[in-house]
Length: 276
Image (cartoon, rainbow, N blue to C red; front, side):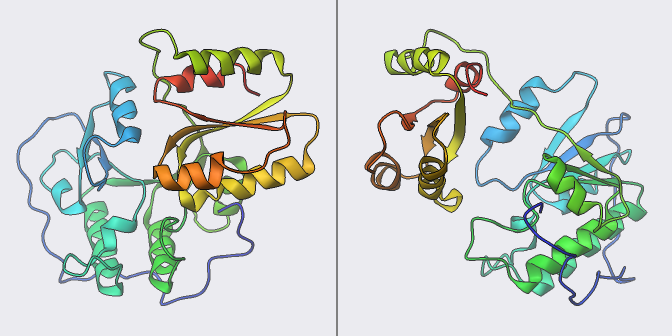
C-alpha cells in the first residue's frame, strides 16, 4: 500500500448488509474467545502459520479455518483475523475472483460482526500480487474490508501512513521474523557465506521465498547499478528451479557486489544476524 498514491479508486462502494444473509448458527464450544485465523493456503500447514502456531503464547487461543462459513459455529465470538483475501472471493466452480463471490464474502463478514465478532485484517498486500494484475473486484474487496474491520495490522510505517487515510479503524505496525532455532550446524556453503558476511562490512540481505512476482533480477540490477559500498546477499528457497537458476544465478555480476545462495528454513536465523 505504501507504494500507492492517493485514495482507493472509486467503485461500486461498500457492500451493504443484506437482510437475506444466512443465519449464524452456533454450537457450544470453548468459553475463551478465540483468535481465528482465516487461511485458505492450498495445504496445511503453510510456512507462515506453522511458525505463528508454534510460537504463539499459551494464553492466546489460536484457531485456523479455511473459510468464513466455518467461523459461525465457534462460541463465544472472538476475533476473525484475515490475511490474504484472494481465495476468499473465488467462485468455487471457476476459481475466478468474481463480484458475486466478493459480495458474499463481505456479507459474511458483516454477519459475523453482527454476531459479536471483531475483525482484524493483517495487510501483507492490499491487492493480490501473484496474479496478472488487480481488477476492479479486488479494489472493491479492499475498500469493503477496510470499511468493516475493527483494526488493521501492517508491517511497515509507509503502509500504515497510507492505510490511515483509507479506514477509520486503528492501524498498527508490527513484524515478526518467525525465526526457528537451528537444529544443527549449517551446511559448509552456508557457514562460508556467514563468515564472509561478518567480514564484508555493510551487508543487505534479501531472504525468503524466491518467487517470480518479486522480480528479484531487477532488484539485483538496481543494487549493482547504484550501490558501491555495500553487499547484497540473495538467499532462499526457489519457487521453480528453472527460474531460479536462469534468472538469479546465471547472470553477469560485478565480483564483490552480490551473492546468490540457496537457503533452507533454519538458515534464516543464522543469516539475519550478520546482516544489516
